[in-house]
Length: 412
Image 1 (tube, helix red, strand yellow):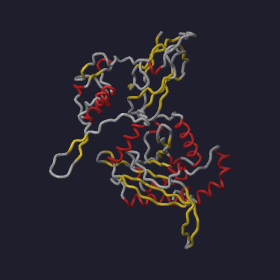
Image 2 (cartoon, one colour):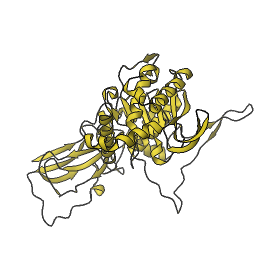
Image 3 (cartoon, rainbow, N blue to C red):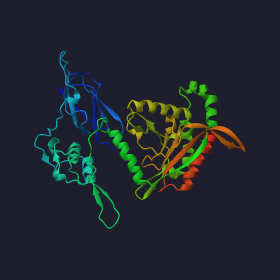
Image 4 (tube, rainbow, N blue to C red):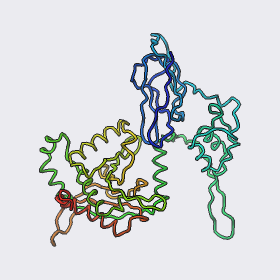
């Protein structure tokens, strides 16, 4: 009996994915709950497991194919046994179920299409009736649109460049060039494209500004040195710098709620909860898992959660829910050696704080020059909702909490 393999529900507001990797080829034996392929979404990689034991009999969506929730990916011959000498073709070479491009393509005048395809057509200013549709039942796919654009069909490909004088705006087209002899062209992953789009959208939408301060890390470093072994034995995790910064930010967010809010249309939404996103770098790109109700977490809970996030982010095991709904973000470029940076907002949030590396520098304390471990910190904020006074005061409060950690314990 044939069992269908379909695209599972991917999470809130996510309707499409890309087939990233097939772990099995046609003819391979599969066991129940065994991962058989990976789907790449806008945020994470999702494994699709076999629901029956048997043999993979068909692959209907090759690697790189764009698929929607509920789409048919392949079939399993439930209960079958793989032939010992069967030579299965690589999954990547298995043809998709859609009609080949060489077949007569249906015009897209009234072709069905997904919301993302419709959005692409609107953004590019394309004539939908001019685009051949090759998808099942005359469906217009992203591949159809991209192929049409690549072949010069996009009406918006030329960029309008204003010129001086009374002339009309000049139209300049920048053609795509082939890769040079020492270059390599690699298609952007769905995650990388999403990161690029979100960051650019944040720049285009928010009135983004950054304010800076510096923090004397002596007290926190002394705290870590004094309680390092005791803390690790008691909680099974190391005491790092992130937990003091998370708690310091929560203290400051309580005092300056606009930094924890967001703009929705012509309204300001003030959040009465503190869900702190922690930026984690992976080989695939930056992801931001969220510490829910960070105000109710202790140092140990924060450190355990961040360690777990980091491991699962590198393994691509984070869920959609774990990366949604943050109210404020912390990013630590210092682990890579960054001295100073201006972090970009994680829309629709109104604030993000950047930590940097710790460097011993001469500073004046009580009228005397002394050497202290110093860190620059940066707060990028949406000036539409956060005033300069609030932003500067917020960062000062974070500085005070880090330089005097007892303030965190006493919520001061």
